[in-house]
Length: 191
Image (cartoon, rainbow, N blue to C red):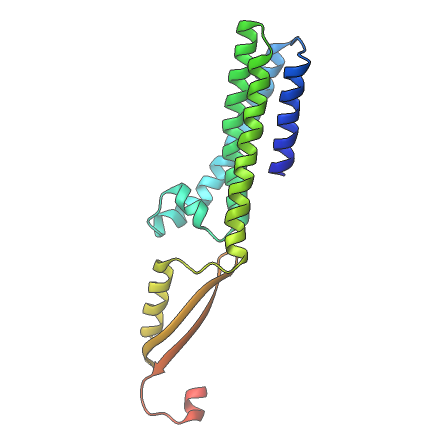
């Protein structure tokens, strides 16, 4: 989605540079940008509200939490909305500069900048999601909490090995070796 948006935006900007067209109604452009900004802003605030509690629990800032979360949907929505808001500001500046100067060049350059922004967001998201697909290890704080939870079990004397790996959105696979307390028989330990 981001790559397609980037390609369309850059193509439109380049075409506008090569074959400039006079703008006819700036008011319509401003209305569309303002409405888009309001709608994207509402969506962005929802993604912020969704990410904020987890950020507070993990003692992270919001951006760090969005990049660290194992939920690719939250990351994509947050990045799309943030990029859209920034892109709308770029488009508004380009449109206003076009109106003030009478030259379509700033508007075309704004379109190209929006395309570059979308391409950068695409690369960041692709890279971050790729890291989760190859089995990223869980945050050290999650590891510490898992060790504490295991040691809180009366049957566990110590944890000798622990591997935590993300296997889906907010899903962690836990593989570990523990020494059990007591001298129970094998059948008792199995229970």
